[in-house]
Picture 1 (tube, rainbow, N blue to C red):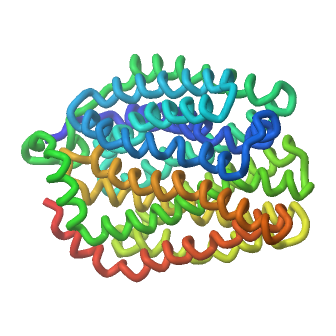
Picture 2 (picture 1 turned 60 degrees about the horizontal axis):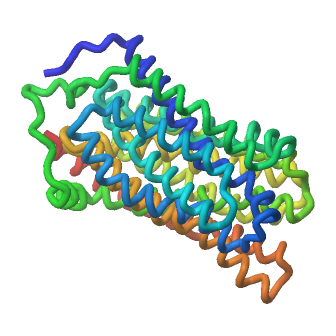
Length: 423
C-alpha cells in the first residue's frame, strides 16, 4: 500500500505545517515578552503571571489534545489543523481586550483549546508523507516552528510592545493565523494513513482510547521519552517565560533589548539545535538506533549546568551566550523523540500517540514549569531580595534537566527490542 507522493509536494506540505507551528508558538510564547507590561497595568503577582504563562494554557491544551487527536485519527487532518489555527489566532487577537486576570485566563484557555487541534494531526500527517529513515529530520524541520515562533514573538512582539503596548501587540499578532488557515485548507491535502510505510494492506480503524493508552504504555522506550520530554519541557518553558522578567528586573537591559537578545538565544540557538538534532539522529540512527536516545540525552546533561550559569555570570553577553547554547542543546531532542514516537506508534493511532506525549509535556512542562518558578520566586522573596529570589528559582532548573538527559541515556538498550516489535 502507499500513495505516490511527489517529493516537491511533500516538502511544500512540510513548509506549510512549519508556518502553522511557527504561529502556534508565536501566539503561545508572546505573553513572555508582554508580562512586564501586563504585570504593571493589572497589578498581578509572579504566581498569577506564572499561571497565565503556563498553567492556564496547558490545562486546556492537555485536556483537549486527546479528543482532538482522536478526531485527527478519524477525520480529515487538514481541516482540523486549519480550523484550529483560525480559532487560536482569533482568540490571541481578542486577548488584547482583556481587562483583568480572569479575562486573561479565559482567553489563554481558548488559545490552548485551539492549539490542541494542530500539533498531533500535523505529526501524524508528516509521518505519512516521510518514510521512517527521514522522519526525524522532517519532524525536526517542523519543530523549527518552536524557535522561529519564539524568535518572531520576541522580536516583533518586543518592538510592538515597546511602541504600541501589549494590547495592540496581541491584536496585530493574532490576525495572520486566520488567513494562513485558509491557505492551508485550500493547498494541503490529506493522504491515507501509512502512505509512507509501504504497508501490504490499509491499516485498521483507530482503536479506542484505553486500548491505545495500554499499547503505548507497554512500550518501555515510550515511557522513557514521556518522562524525559516532560522534564525537558518543564525547564524550557520556565526559562523562556521568565528570563525576560529576570533581565528587566535586574536592570541588565530594556524590554526591547531583552526581546532581541532572547530572540537570538532561543530563536537562532534553538533553531540550530532543532535542525542538528534531527539530522544527527537520522544519520547515526541508521547504524545504531540507540542514537535516537543518546544524542538528546547527552545534550540535556550538558545543558543542565548552563541554566545556572545563565543567571550567575556577570554581563548580559555572557548570560545570553549560556542561554543560546543551552536552548540549542535542549531543542536537539525534538526531532529524535518526535520521530521515534511516530515510528513506535501503531500507524492507525499516530495522532493519539503524540497527543499522549504532549499531554505530559504540557501538564508538567508548560503547566508547571512557569508556575513553579513564579511560585518559588514569590516564596523566596520573603527571605531574600526579589531579584535574588528569581535568580535562585531559575538556577534550580538544572536538576530536572539533568535527570531528563540521564534517563534517556540509561534506557538506550531497550530501544532495539521495542523497534524489533514493530510490524
